[in-house]
Image (cartoon, rainbow, N blue to C red; front, side, top):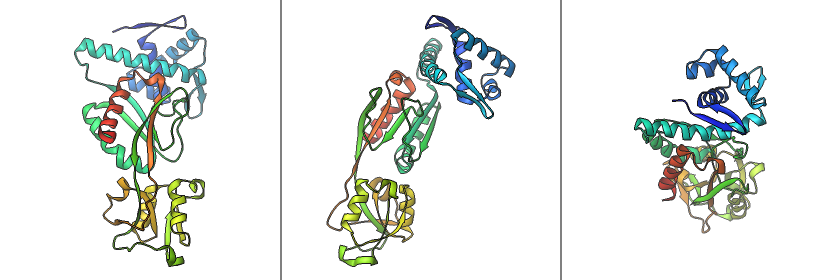
Length: 294
């Protein structure tokens, strides 16, 4: 099927955009050529023709491959939307409307990705086996406006005007110790050892609460990774404040009552407004809300 488009006065067809998207996703002409069954010289020729017709350089040539320029990134946003519509039309005409395909890039914290999102992604994969979900888990805040991720989960509300977001759920926290531990007391002094956030995240509500609740505790270890904190706690390295969905699933840990409860955190999900009509994103977001917020 040949589909023609007109973007900013330039006529293109779907095959041009398929080539552009393959190169953007694979990073080299050779890998993109293998992906869509073309030869590398053909891919290079078609890319040069596309850049000439648009009057823009879409990729920067580097020793490691091809990297999108700012103009290429702008084209990518629209090309993916066109791809979604073109594929939807193909599915409709072929009677396979329920089949979604393509790539979705998600970003979340380490523990949230492991504990909360992994089961949802697995269920989504069974429903839509042609969609590849890429989950990035680290402390970095990936940018939706710069298209570093398609769907971002984080504990801070989104302030960017081009981002559509919502509060997903509230997550309670608790103080944990190794199984068999007794609740620590503030008067126990330096006999208490704790595992807490590293200095960069020392102002997080749970870290502030821990310091206030056990002011004389010795800091045994610091980490910005909740799963590392849980492992240290389970190994007897010290008490730790953890999200309950993470701590309660670990049989090596026990939640402890010291008469006060650490503050929980809200989790927000956001995506760029240009992605609003992307069918695969909507399908995944609906499942996330159904499983986590329902």
